Image 1 (tube, protein in one colour):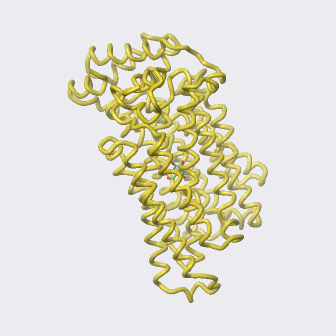
Image 2 (cartoon, protein in one colour):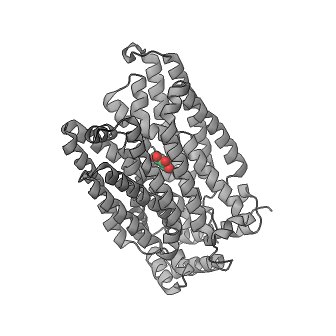
Image 3 (cartoon, helix red, strand yellow):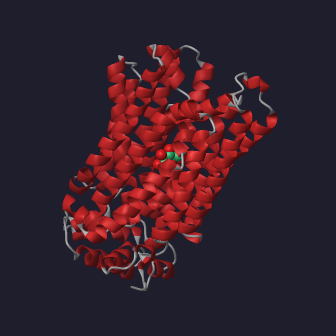
Length: 477
Ligand code: BGC
């Protein structure tokens, strides 16, 4: 019997499990607030600081650099400070940097603050999935892990909406800009304060030899002594292997295998083009003559709404089925969006654009975001938090999180100029090509991780089970 079955037998999980996971997932809010901030504020920032297009781009993309550095160091924080304190640290940096930005300091300082925001988000984007995967019982680990992505999308939605409302209410950037930053500060402070109620991750406590404290946490989250003993035994078994692996673990064959899966999942998550839509959809819609609220709010709204079904589907259908559904949807809609732009051609007066290509573009964008929100958004972070063996989990997640930020930065920095250089339709076909590769990759290498304990998966990995079968309870060799 595994932990999921033990949990199910004893009649579900305590409310506190859901409270803990929801509070931890608030770290995802920071991520989303940052990702969503630029789309509807860049113009105001440019006005206030008299920035040209390139300076604006540079300011925006410092975020990704901060994210990479944050992710790089977060493995160390997670290991030495623990998961909870690292999350509080990320929340504090984020709150302080956004509050300071509201004072509208000189541009270099404002940019340093954006770097710090990225740094905080880099740390949070590593810690939250790790914490959730280590704290949630196996049978709801998927749903709880998905909360992270849900919070990201809520963050993107909230900040897009508040920025639009603020810009409409206050025309003067000297008033609207501080208000935008203060809104972020408020949300971030909420997460920071909420973080104090979190317990430490039982797996981290065990890793540090603090078994009594780990048992105390498990007692809060699990129902029966049987479940607690089971969880402790599983963690101990996992800890029995080589411990405290340094960076050298990346050279071990079994680790390289799962690292490859995690890295490629993150690469594809970005190369299917999501951040072109998150950052530039108002601009891209503008090219096709779609303006106003529709252009500003369609993507964040659809993105948030369709993350909700993912919470259930990730447990019901499993991770792989969702990845297929998402990649196929994104493939078809990227081709349709490319075709819409081809139909528009080089019309420079957007009022001359017919309604058919506009409708196709809008419908494709909505379906595309649906495809991402229900699958690659949540599932990639989730699987990356599940596949690594305990002794190398921080390193594995550090690397995969850095890869996410690196490729997100690449897309942010190049999508629009690529469109300029090769025609508006071109980039959509490129992303469609990556969707095809993503489908092949999922079919060949990605394991189904639904319902299996992290410890069993680790055992399978070390027993030489093939990647695709890592999540099987009694896998073939
Ligand atoms: C991705 C981000 C993206 C967000 C959109 C996340 O899973 O990592 O790059 O902006 O989803 O919801």
